[in-house]
Length: 227
Figure 1 (cartoon, rainbow, N blue to C red):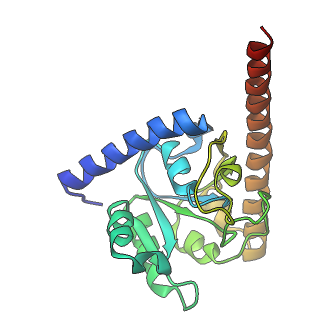
Figure 2: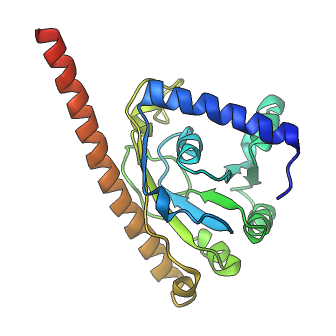
């Protein structure tokens, strides 16, 4: 997808700021980057813990990441300008969502990476919840790999009942993709089940790694205070 030079520079600037903030404030760590396709389209499917999830997942991608956002976020002009500059795709959750579906397929066909949250909304408790089948039509029509990914820590940083984010440790893990030939052989129910299974596996791994990092950090702080 063609982008202007000012837009590319703006994106790189924001990504640099986000990377510095992610390391300094959230101690962000990403694993499994090798599963992301180096070129061509790809549908990235993730659990959903906070409004910061697209940023954290984008920091784990060497390539630029498009993401689907609910239509209501585009009502406030400054925010609309910002998320449009970052390749957001508006989708109407209350309507048919046809416009968002069409644009998502278009970008995948153009060789872009697109992020979707199959849970449909942010988790209320930090756990992975049941996936909705809305992504199946996109998966089967696009003919691109489906890359599962999970986050742990964004819920602690910015749960849905909190106004502003706070410091937390955030880990991200990408999993082995489901290839187009595999997608074609699955029913919608099987595909939803397999995507959910892979996201849960990634979430369990990233939760363990984050808890280990948090435990080591707490132990180090305790030792410094004791000496």
